[in-house]
Image 1 (cartoon, rainbow, N blue to C red):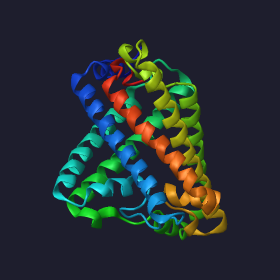
Image 2 (cartoon, one colour; image 1 turned 180 degrees about the horizontal axis):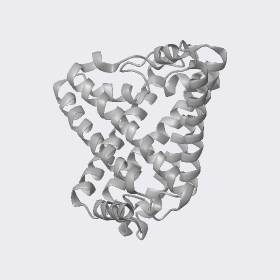
Image 3 (tube, rainbow, N blue to C red; image 1 turned 90 degrees about the vertical axis):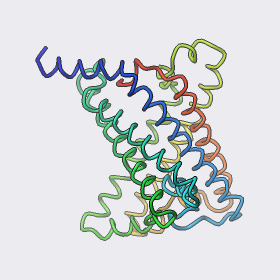
Length: 287
């Protein structure tokens, strides 16, 4: 074993046994759970408030991650919570960065590289949520940023924009399929400690995890398909948050039902994240 490999193994071992990292991950998973509950609430509220009319834009009423966080930006207490959540998302980004650099040592070859690339993608996602939470904490709802449609339109105007959108759509759809399969196969069970795996708590936690992963996977697939369609038809209005995407695919008659189903599922995922934070298996922090 080379000196670099020895150093990486040492860093990975220390990460798995770090009490500080353990606390950061638990807190971050709790914040991520709050985000998913907010997203579920926004989705259900859209159905109740609009009676079949999709929400436009990426503001506080949009079923996107940023739109969900924007629900907290209306008062000082919410901004304090956003500040705390931003710090927790930074902790999650640090965790996944460690995993991307030195983690998954039990896997070999291409599988390790794929898992590390996945961890790096999660670094970017958590960093984005940290940035969005911090901006909303500082600027209020004025910091909610551009809508998904306007962002898509800007990308589409670039020389290779349509190709980039198709690629992004395929990645999103592939990620969604992977999440759904991971949930159905109960791949998340090893992430839980022995108390959760060997007690009466196992069944409700597993059910929440399976429903949550499948619902989140479905949302990624739908949004990925809409991104690809937007690129192929050069129509940026075909994209949007979770609410807009489901309405575009399923039509107004079933769109509300689809949002309720996926919204409830994403809420289940948020509850699962709380359970995972409470029953975190420290030995799997970097694998």
